[in-house]
Length: 431
Image 1: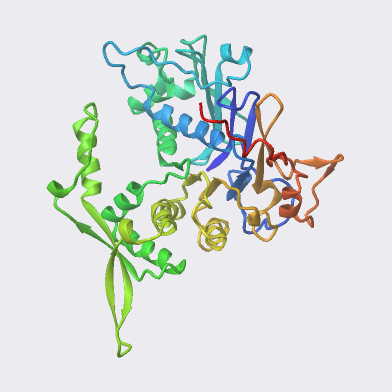
Image 2: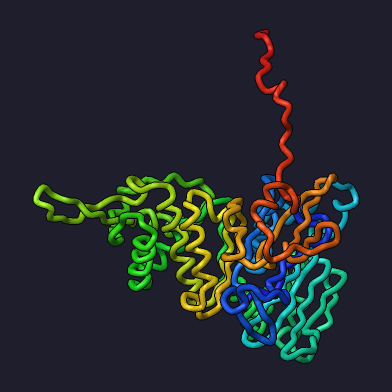
């Protein structure tokens, strides 16, 4: 489970910004939208709002970067390849360009609370740390400073002797995981279990792979699409000859990746619809998902596997622009799957960005589940929850019309659109 995630000097976030999944003291929907674990009351979902280019996607991209870097930082550089450079800092301030990028996450895993983070310089890990709190008191497992100076606790014996095997641009946690360290491997596995879909570009791969491994997932995906009134009766997978699949590959793609892509593209996803005859009898007709179905139906399919697996296994799911191509009632339904005790018995968590103001509703979300990103006059993004936002020193009341107030600009985080249209239709004479 995710407790909190914060970044500093990453993408458009100059100062530290933190998303906390710890529920506040407010009482509304506490019995359904929150759960208790490890002595904490945590949120099942969180929505992030903001104008276009405010930094919503940047914050989720920072989480994706951390996940990916934990997995890949130990990868060796090819001969002749330039040294890895970490240049995703805040670029609108000269001082920030010389400061490190900072990432920190707190998670609940196997009954323990772990706080892990690192700071990146231009071409090296400057600092890295891992702390654990089995109960209330937090203790150090390891601290790395000045790039490669290590202070390793006796409680992290799996790291002993691995300091010299750790490159200056590789994470110590990842190295320990590669050597089968119990704690480090479980944390790395947690990162790997977190699914992120950014920039409205969900992929067919996870749902398709899941259906090929688990026939029950095929039935559950079919049930989800049927529940959402897509007119689909069921789904099946149909193999086609790989020599008939046309995929253009760049010359530098490894053969194993080519093989995996070819496997995916050699599987057709077939949907079945009812066809009615003159005598009112009916039969099923086959559709190709990508040739015959709508963009919204395709997106639901892409997200169906990760959603159902997250609910079944208590995973984290992160989606950028969840509502894109979806009807508002469908978006509400998907969020409701996570907020429900019945459909989310394993306390999966959903984090998503959205522009759907109909979700700013106390019947759907608590105030501490509603987050906003706003840019200041210097182009720096800031993240805050509605529960901590104040107007004239007063916190937002639970009987307020959240969507109406947001659209009126009372919570900021909306575009300030100019009414001046004088330049829009001007055309320069042909030269």
